[in-house]
Structures are given as structure tokens and as C-alpha cells.
Length: 475
Image 1 (cartoon, rainbow, N blue to C red):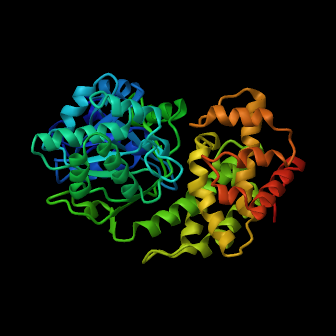
Image 2 (image 1 turned 90 degrees about the vertical axis):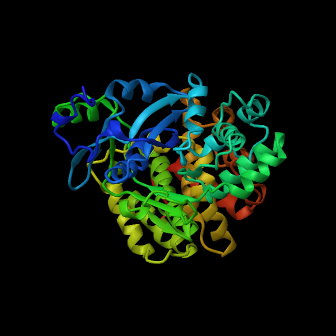
Image 3 (image 1 turned 180 degrees about the vertical axis):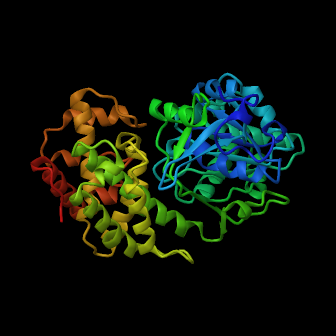
């Protein structure tokens, strides 16, 4: 089994430092596959010359990652599957705590002066935000945390209480760096924490507002879920059993808004982009990668495909996605300095075709009610305002509705924070274009002005009818 004791014999690239020598300087909430493939790999590279940035991972729910990595001394294998395949042992994850079991241990880490950075990959729903991106003060976890700040359930609750304790101890705030696909994620997160703090302590809220650095970010690397096939492959290549290896493509990108952090990490030395224009990178990624990903997921599942690369072999489907990107979305975007949007699209399409990565469409289809407003509806609303043809942008929305309907009929579970409402809507559908109206009434997904627009309703109903009638797509 992979561990510090057996590390020297692993047939893979090894950390360029002694993992046991790292100081914990980062607390990360949500140590799932993406974090361990992405941010942890950057901190692993930093550790080769700066040992201050070891990671304490905090899981808010499951003990699975902790239980897998603890016997391995936090080590795991990162398999990079692309035109060239490589295997690398990551040593930056020094421990994993489970929030519900280790609350005071989590706060002890967050109060260490050495901990200067808190990062997060808790998914869009983990920020407990309302549809307008403000803190949802009626969210059950937020209501619990306001009443019980010492024993929080939410990421927001942990951050606010940790900042309260740091202030009381005379410590400066950590730098808070969200890494989820939310527009203006740093701004949204800081606002949410400030509002939460202000519910019980106005002075704390002012301190958070005045002193907390919370830069916005954009992160990107396709990271399929780990399966037994990957575990077997890693064991055969490296000679080490690994309970939870991670796989991703070669491409990886981390863009962070310029911010103040005295003596912080040398981000640029490990390939991180620091910029004053994160929103332009963010919109390009959300709308040109994540939006087409969701489009492939729902349309691909409708056609019976299982993975992104398999769906991209469907010429009609691949052409529809390409035209959605080039003709419908690119005209809406501002290109960040140095980024050619057309070339960026072609690179994304190449990444989608990567046969070495088996990215399950079912995984991408999770949490559609949270993802589609950011990935698709944002573009649709702007296209509508400009008088552009919105038919292709309606296709993923119609396909999502068909996805929900089929799940409701089959009795299969839906992974979505609105699962109960969606199943109820799906069961009430009649397999007619009029079904669209039931979904459009869902205010957590569709804003009233957009849902009430006759062009939008007609476009989605037309796409829905098309999906009902045949396996084809609009040209």
C-alpha cells in the first residue's frame, strides 16, 4: 500500500520534498477529486521550494476521503491521462478532518497563525446562496449555524466562526480563496460571510468587510470520478495499492484575482495566473467549457451515450456543440488579454474528444438546477437582449427537462438540491411541449422575466418537441 514508508519504491514521479516536513498553511473545504487533482497539485509543486503550504482537508459530510488517505499518510496518485500518460504521487495533503466528527480540531487548524489560506471546492450549492447569489438566510444549514455558531454545518458557518475566533485571538484573517464555478465567486463568498457575521455581530461583520481578502478565481481541469478500473491501473503501473487515486487530463488552469498577501505563495512560479480581470476568464470558461459540458451531458444521455468522448463521436451532436460555442456564445464574450476565444473553443473541443479520459455524462448532469443558470441561462439572457437566435441555447434546457422527466418515470434518484421538486414536476409531465411551463415556474432556476418571455418559452418548447419526436437536433 502507498504510504510514507513505501513511497521510495513507487514507480511514479515522487514529491520533490519530504511530505512529513510540510507545515500546514492551507485549510481546504471539500477535499474531493477536483481539489486533489487541481489545487493540491499546485501546492505540491510549491512545496518543492516552500514548505509552508501543506494542506489540511476538511470534509463537511463524508468520511470517505479521510478513511482512504489516512492509512496512506495522505499520499495518493495523480494519473494524468492524455496524449502522454504520467503518474505522480501528491504529498501536499497532510491530513483530512471530517467536520461533524472533528469540529474543534477543524477550528484548531483554522486558528493556527501558520494557516494563511483557506480554499474551497464545495460545489455551487455548498455556498448556501439564493438565486440572486445573496446568502440564503432561510437555508436550513444557515438557520442552524446562526443559532449554533460553535457547531456549524455549512462552509459559511465554519468560515464566519473561524474569523470570529481569529479576531478575538488578535490574529489577522486568512486569505479566503473559493474555487467553485460561481460568477464573481470571491465577491459572492465575502458578501455571504459578511452578511452571516452581521446577523449576530455587527463589529465582526465590519472587520470581515474591511480586512478579509477574498479573491475571485477561475479553475479548470477535466477530472472524472475515480473508479475501480483506475485503482487497478494505478496499482499495476506504480506497484502500489492506492485506495483513492485521482485522474485528470493534462490541461490545468488556475486564475486568481490579484490581492494582498504579504509573503504569500509564489503563485506564478507554479503556473497560476494572477490578473485584474478574472471575470473575463470566468465567463469564457463557464460558458465555453461548462455550458457545452452540460449540453453534451443532457443531449448525450438523451441519445444513450455514457461519456463525453463517446458523445463527441456523434457528428451531429459534436457539430451542434461547436456551433453553440462559436456562433452563439463567443459573440457575447470579452476576451481576456492573451486569450483567443476561437482557439480556446477548438482546444476545448479537442479536450472533450480525449479518449484517455472517460468523463461520465451522468456525473456532469448532477446539480443541473444550480449549474444551468450560470452555464446556459446567462448566455441565453444576453443573446435574447441582443436579438440573437436562441434556439441552440434552448436545447440543453429542454434536454435537462427530458432528463428529469425520465428520472421521475423510472424512479431513479436525481442528484440535485432541488431533487424533490424536480421529481414532482417530472411526474406531473405529460410528454407534451406544455411540460416546459411546469419547469419555467421553478423560480430557483428560471428568473421571472426570462421564464415569462414568449421567445424563450417558444424556443424551449420547440426544442422539447424536437427531442420528443426524434433523436435529432436543430441545425
